[in-house]
Image (cartoon, rainbow over all chains, first blue to last red; front, top):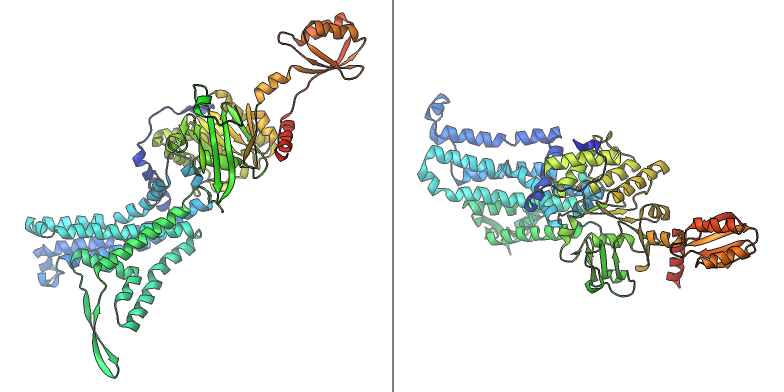
Length: 304
Length: 321
């Protein structure tokens, strides 16, 4: 090592490809993230559900095991779109808590310590910075959502045979797309809150509030107006509709309610908002997050 | 360098200057911060001076691509800041004025991370991070968390991250801020070492005239967003060596005649004091020989030169006029 040559010299060696530089951020961030025992424990626990689902798939195809456990095939969950939808929902919410632990500190820490000029004075753009920060959440959550989801799909296809695989390919794409939409939404929301709320605890609380407070409003609105359109305010309902749409289990008419109107009992059909409305709202939320991030992710703020 | 005429490419020499300002203006919220700056800066170390709020930091930030010029442009090492920002950023290093670091990282990790962001592969980045930290004198503290550093150590860590990728041009914004005298001396020494290595040009922004005088060859003085003085300190120093002030004893008549015969201009300011402008080829030793021949004692000989403080104060006066 040339540390004894204490003189300034230029670097003349090879450079890493420009397209890959955003990955430097998650690589270094993971060191810090996995230093937390709480996070590492939760991350390990997040593989419990995939394990349970894998066991269920295995049991479904193992008559000997079923005989030992004195179960018949009909008592085991059917392996269909609903099975994988349940998996995506469980892992999606586990991912939410992981994102809650990892996301809010990412941009906030750089803003608090004036770190952004150090990134942006290098051949590293603002968009690369945002993508780099988002990819911390994206890579972590991918490893517990669509990656094990597709492995489960592969396991089921292997055990069930080619015909099942060819008939259920849309499930695989729904696992991938549904998880990706959720992960992107979480990544954008966590980074945006992180950029605007520098205090980590407040940012985490803000993220929880963003998911649960509008859900309460949505429930009140639905109850008062006997409608389901209030669900458009709830991020949880939005993503559930999108997932159901992707897995082909979306039902727009969710039942009927009886209401008194002018002394007469009237039956009102409860109609879920159309799928396109859920997609549109999610798209608008993502666009708003990107706009808010672009306002905050700057080397220096100019006070006008 | 011209202050008045825009320094378009036709005005320039063939080789690109370190920084070429071409009618560069920056406006924030309708308020002009930098007003039509022109110039071609070529020194190994360029000092950027000016009172608070003159636009020094805004100029550096604009050159780094943090702010968009409202009019005009600038070129750094031949690349235009408007269209070739990424290329420029791969050639420069920047040491910000304020505390800037990535928290919860050891110093070596921080500097390595910065090197990787500059494009160095992980192995080379780690090696150069060690080198840079030893160079700035943080070799022993490199595994400590940056958050625990003192102000002086943080300044050194900032310098290390600015040079770790071996840039061709280094912007140092108030590098001696908050340093005690020994630390300041070490910082100045390092800046001079980098300058003298010939491997990188330096732009040093400071309000401390002594720092600039000790490190820089060229100075640019900004006032109210305008470039009011450009001065090549090296040439100024050389030129100033020709102006001598002599205090003498003895009969000056033959001595003054002798000085005239050497081709030098001479003026008596009092009975014993002379001001002399030396001609090319005339050495000070010739004056001593002449004085000995004329039986004149030279009691004191001083160079009359403008200090940087004089230049700065004049610029401030002229600027306000």
